[in-house]
Amino acid sequence: MKLLALEASQNATYYLSRYQQIVGLGAELYVLNGIGTDDFWPAGRYRRAGGKHVDDLIEAARAWHAEEQFEGVLTFSESAVIAVAAVAEALGLPGIGVEAAVRSRNKLLMREAHRRLGVPIPGFRYVADVDAALAAAQEFGYPVILKPTLGAASNYVFRVDDDAQMRERYGQALTGLGLMTWYAMEADGVDLGPHGLLVESFLDGHEHLIEAVVWDDEVFLGSIVDRITVEGDTFEDDVHHSPTELTPEQVAQVHAVVAAGTRAQGLRRSVMHAEVRFHHGRPHLLEIAARPGGGGLDIMARLSADHDPIRAMMDIAGGQRPDVHHFQPTEVHTAAMCLLSGGGTIESVGIPPEVAEHEGVFYLKITAKPGDVIRRPPDGNNVLGGIGVADASLDDALRTATDLAGKIEVRMVGDR
Image (cartoon, rainbow, N blue to C red; front, side, top):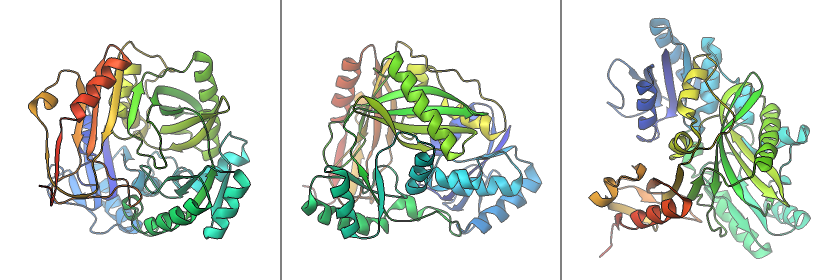
């Protein structure tokens, strides 16, 4: 299978390991970046369009397709889902369609689609100014969630508990709209929908991250991961466990909600990363992204549920039905967490051998490099990377992951 991977703006080397997984699964992978670095991918299978306008991406992809005859186009980047849909349409390749891509990227349009079909979701309001945000909060009752419509990775997502905090957080989030890397990496020339802020009602229960597949309208929950973070008023999304501790009855409820959201967004053949949160004992849909989940969620899915989101993406991109099954947990427990630091400019990140060579570590990725600026809430939500550990129980996996994360040495410029 010959596939084309695409990013409008290259996200450093973040997706390199996933591209390598695609190759390891037997595909010939070519990479097209609108804007990118030299030598990112092997010569002969790597090109840059020279700009990130969607017309430039389509023109470059069309010319390359005439030479190579790709069977599909894909992306792992939230910021390229719409661009890839546009390229797939232009080349006549399998894809989710631009309209479904926009509904799966823009949180306001997603929420509106969910509401039309009666999907259980939080209450929401698109707010044009702080007065509208205050009015929405009064309508829903504090606490509420304030979030960007085109955000990702919990950037500028705040829990707000009162009017004074809303005034403060609204200003911070409004400033953040122009600073978000995920928005800046989008292709130019694409209608992304409203770029602004939402106020949502607060859901008070436990949260779950799902790697799913839809094929001809049948939805499969491949993996379910429990979010076990102790929450504050910002959302680092930093500690996860799999397989889920949900009961079979709760899994069935989650499946129904995800399937309803999938239909609402117009997704028929796609991999999906869904997030669900319980409220008053019932699951409510937070979002469905038309891509696999980030971090080590793909590896957690393979270890704890025998589901491979990367293989599923590869097959679907090429127009083939993936070999998937409904949720079937294994006996392997995994715990994974984001590696966090204080804000500042990175001087160095050191990984001791006892961490790098630990037999239980299945995922260890440092995405920050010397010179990078780490912004922490309320100014952003940058992380150093992530670590994941597999063990025989949740307690053992979590204890080991926490211990190893604490041994990673981070120095900021100016540290003594």
